[in-house]
Amino acid sequence: MSKTDWRIGVAGLGTVGGGLLEFLLERPGFSPTGGQAIVTGISARTRARPRPFDISNIPWFDDPVALARSPENDIFVELIGGFEGPAKDAVEAALLAGKPVVTANKALLAHHGAELARLAEAKGVPLLFEAAVMGGVPAVKIMREAMVGDDILSVAGILNGTCNYILTEMEATGRAFADVLADAQRLGYAEADPTTDVGGFDAAHKITLLAALAFGCAPNFAATEVEGIDQIDLMDIRLAKDLGYRVKLVASAERSEDGVLVRVHPSLAPMAHPLAQAGGALNALFIEGQRIGRIFVQGPGAGARPTAAAVAADIADVMTRAVRPVFQKPASELKPFTPVDPSKSMGRAYLRFMVKDEPGVIAAVSETLAEAGVSIESFLQKPVENADGVPIVLTTHAVAESVLMAAIERIANLSSVLDRPRLLRIARI
Ligand SMILES: NC(=O)c1ccc[n+]([C@@H]2O[C@H](COP(=O)([O-])OP(=O)(O)OC[C@H]3O[C@@H](n4cnc5c(N)ncnc54)[C@H](OP(=O)(O)O)[C@@H]3O)[C@@H](O)[C@H]2O)c1
Image (cartoon, rainbow, N blue to C red; front, side):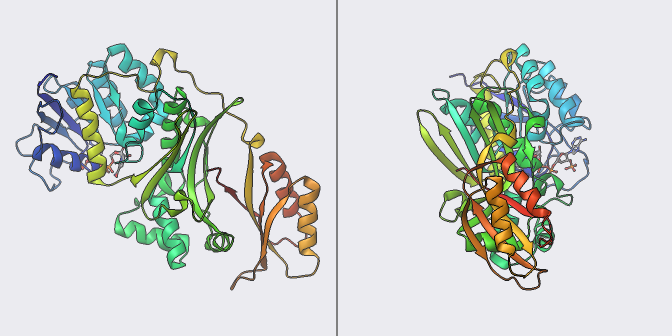
């Protein structure tokens, strides 16, 4: 093993970049190669911003692209974020300069992963992104390295800590989504603009990357079905609990003969299931391989120290001079997967209908479901305080999504139904 020292350029000194800088300044000799990782250039938006570490002796670059191109560093680390603009420009510039790149940027790779992989491969340099998925949990390494001797059938899990925190707090405190989100923003668990997290897009970026690694295809964000938690009603969290389930934002990717289905939905997990038990800001993931069977990993999906540790592990990989395909297959062979039509997918569901409190309503709902071909598994009718009407809640047996949607539409048109029916899928886990 070569004991060569490596010079590191770090663009972005926020939560992750700051955590990485603190680590590298304190432990430059962390790599198992025995070489030193020395920070030889940094870039951020505002040079004058006070930072909890001393940067006075490290060369500063106003332009991250100039840092990426600088001959004064051997590895470029991108921790700015965003799928366009300076992050993309700088990563491209570093790869074009033939420099290994480490990034935590899932948005960038979910949107431009295939073209960046081709560029990295053309230059024969690694492009590593362990920190982009599940922060400190080594999900990417499990998929990219440990499972190459298997054929992955599916992955499913909780990939966004902010949403998991909000759902956990809603259930524990009985407060509404907007209240808990405001608290999460005050505590720094949620961004000022929470759309990427609560709209499900961050989890969608991550499952897009896991699907690419699992099935050896190009990241295909456009084919990912995305639903966030912003429409989740406290009533559904409570009623699901009465039925023995917990609401989680579940991201999943599964392969079948028809193609690949990648989706993010608020979903119900049985209360005793490990996904239901992963509370607060935790992330959790099941990986199912044809030979290995099921693997479950859980841990901190964000935060300065866990995420910086994952970035450092990638830097150590570069220092070993290992170069693997970015997404499991040579980039020249990467193709977008064939998306499965979600309406054909089979699954169980939780349905809630707000109805007038009058005789015959339950019969009308259950007859409409039966006529449409939806079979009921369990049923609950429970008055709820301060609600217009009475909720009828039921879970179904497995049914094609197209059949379910048609049944919901018919029930929505019944005169005794007061509001849009609410559908939550029961996670296939
Ligand atoms: N936060 C997490 O726990 C976490 C976990 C996993 C992955 N990630 C990913 O890691 C990346 C960084 O996230 P973060 O949370 O560390 O973000 P952050 O705290 O907002 O930090 C962003 C950094 O980028 C700098 N920056 C912004 N625009 C720039 C520009 N035009 N030129 C140069 N620098 C610029 C900022 O400069 P100033 O400091 O001067 O404002 C700041 O240092 C993102 O891709 C994110 O998705 C984050």
